[in-house]
Length: 366
Image (tube, rainbow, N blue to C red; front, top):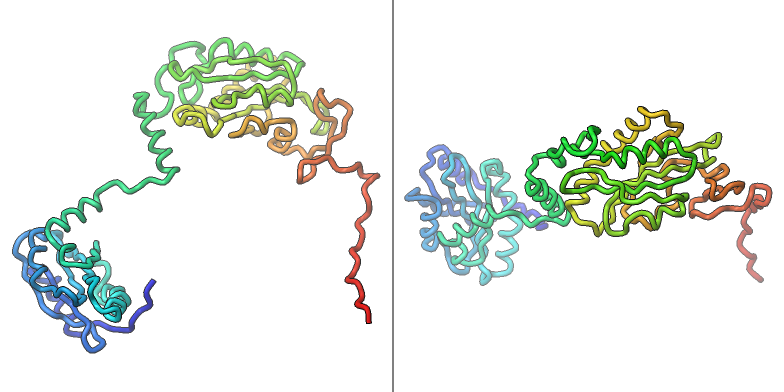
């Protein structure tokens, strides 16, 4: 950022610009720096449109001398600031005009200026060049990776023919429908009810049939937390309902853990569907269990991951906020697990050494 040059606007320029704003009959005001002051050089009246009037700038600008030009647009009380600094101008003049332009607009009232143009030759200030400038302003701005992803999601919504994801196929499969229009198949409902009545640790892997917007049972695995890594698909999103027996709370407990797995390599449209539907699916899960004679409780938090290979018992514990003190799951019955920050099991309390005061610096030899 250039430092301010300290050059100020002359009273004459202030008066001339005010008159031009009021009359709305002046197209261009040429401004130069003279004797450490910004002064009015000459004026060009309105003739046609701003685009066509750009042809007149060649006559008032010099090949090697910088200048400012204030151009009235075709909209009322709107001006464009033109900074003309030729490549062939002297270095000192280039620096002087660069460090003064902010002072010019502030002194005249920056709210009147809605655009600016930087030119290094007269060829940059032709009607054709101005037309290209306007086209550039109207062109879509480059998107960041995140913005591009959001655009892909919107395109997927339009492709599906719905204004809101998953509105549509509400009459298929089970009468239970989530808030986003996802239907529960009878098979999934019955499997969830069975989890509530069973005592074994089990994993239900649930996928969405994108065409019918229906929850389908993809797999049922009898096993504990160690089975989650292989149960969750590595390249497709899914939901998993994990019936977990553990003693990490005050007493032995059987919890149903809702897991939302969404690998980062999965298709954008699928990620959109699973992400938007996860909260409603979790609510539907509670609805099914509350309507049956279930002895299992739904965990208070959902587990989410973009890397299925990281999901194990430690991951579940951390996600649900258990401090690690307790008997563990049936797979680890009788063991005592205490999580440390690094994820290791520290020594039992009776084997831990008391904090030892560090030694001071060694004495220097005489």
